[in-house]
Amino acid sequence: MLEIERKFLVKDLSTVNLSVLRCLNITQWYISFDPVVRVRISDDTAYLTIKGKGAVSKLEIEHTIPLADAVDLMELQKGSKVRKKRYIYPHEGRDWEIDVFEDDNQGLILAEIELDDEHEKFPKPSFIGREVSFSKGYSNASLAKKPRKK
Image (cartoon, rainbow, N blue to C red; front, side, top):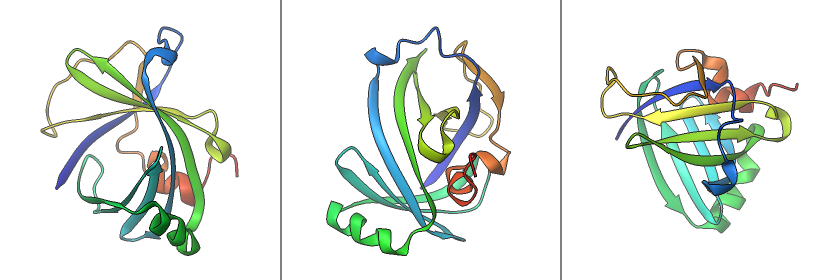
């Protein structure tokens, strides 16, 4: 499946009441960076994901796996774990994902939107800052390889 996603820094969340938004607690780690192979636990559900190369559009294959398998795959972890709270923010008919990073990436807040087309126009909430879709340092894999606090 083709994933088309744009990613932005969040400049100001003071206008957003996070407590009323759906929130997922996410822990993820990587077992390969080339190709990208990720294990994610989102609340009580585990996923194994393989991602292709690309900044905005990339191949993504994702399957749920047993939680016990995800825990076993920690043995193969490369880099640091990435922990974050993901808030789902509805805006003008689209869902934005606001990721508030923890641990080694604490202080970083990113917002993502999934699109149907790379050139699709979309309205941005007021808290959206500079686009970082093309900046490799903001991918989750990059944050696992080189956390912001190390």
